[in-house]
Length: 97
Image (cartoon, rainbow, N blue to C red; front, side, top):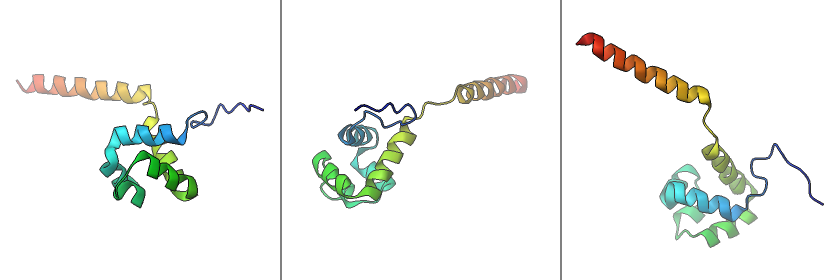
């Protein structure tokens, strides 16, 4: 019984993959700063984190939210805005010369 979940950004991603990805991106110290749980502070490991997160729904929710927010694709408008600002900065510096 497979349900299609097109609006679920976590569909098909294991908790282990989420923790591993966040550890690679932020490190244990960075994770501990972003999510205040002991499994990221005291002798952290993927295995101990998974054990804790599977038993603690509120912590798992925070980890999943951090993962989703860190994986959002930037809007094309953000890139266009950065390019526009960079071109304005270049033009302004040439005017000063």
